[in-house]
Image 1 (cartoon, rainbow over the protein chains, first blue to last red):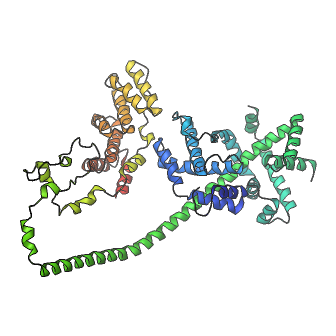
Image 2: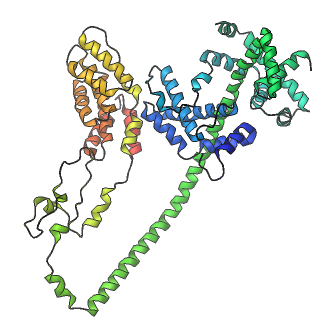
Image 3: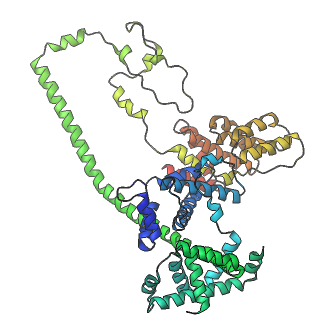
Length: 195
Length: 329
């Protein structure tokens, strides 16, 4: 990314580091001049509305963040290119779901980018996950979010004001089991897993 | 830590990529030999996908907060600009006045020191015809095929052509110059913004005759973004069958989407004049957007069509028209 104070490498490192460094990096990216406009232009030129463009930009940032955290970015292109490519792929996916899919040549995208479609949780699972997360309680949600973002147990203990990292670890396990139990007790979830 | 917790920890470390290469390889070997462990790892993987929703939710909330923050900063910037604007204007006025004063002083000084310069000016042949710059308003809709003013005049002392007679005098030219680069709203972008596909969703028609079949084929092309193909398929059967209005509507939108606004306008007008609901009101709105795309050249017509929609609060596109009017103001 073209910026006076940070580079693609530093941005990747910040996102992977998590915590406030990640939040700062994502904020910079969100406000990076020209990036939003690139996504908006593509969506508006391919049958989307202003609202679609706004949603697409935000959803792209979510996918971008996830891909970077999971180490899926191979560094074959500039991050800006990668970001816009994710947006293009995601827009094709959304259009397909809306039944307005336009066949586009793969050459229009950067070859090294994996389809975010492959990462997207199936909508049925998504609903069941949402439901289960709604039942585990606010504190468990907060803890599991930090855990998912690879915060260390020491950091979690500090943030959540637990006595020690061991207590935080026990709590993380307990919350995770609670999440599992709710999912397992849902017959729809079991049916979906067996399909 | 009990066995279940230990196993939980080990699986999580594996999935988070925290194991060394050797540890990960050993874990994978165990997994290959133990289907229960493999199933458990799969379960963890699935749960982690679910937990990503928490991260997603949080990030979306943060983005909303950043938007709010930017929105709060925007008025502050606007206020600063509002304060600075009068000062800037005053500076500019002062600069212009100083230049004018300087010019006047220099001219006055010259005329006082060399009064004999005046007869020389009188004797000079006027060359208005040949030197008048060609200042024209741009024609966004269709460029002119030839411009007489660009043809070099073989003899500037010849009788002036009509074209030159229309040209402004050299003194007036600098004043008209800014009109060549008009500043204002980006009409095309506004047109794109207000043209929403869902407002003009063409429907399939029954497979009755050849006309319907070609319409449905054209519709497929349209949906796939192949507007040129759609136009070619629609043209021969445009007036055939009972669904003429749908064909014309699809034709008009295919033309619009391929940037042929002038060609789309007669179709929108025809659909409007049919009075058929909901096509007529849709066509009226699409007509307004077609004209908007050709602004400022089509401004008078655009204003009339928009005013027509705004005059009817029950019009299907009344709110959009209001919103567009606000944006233009």
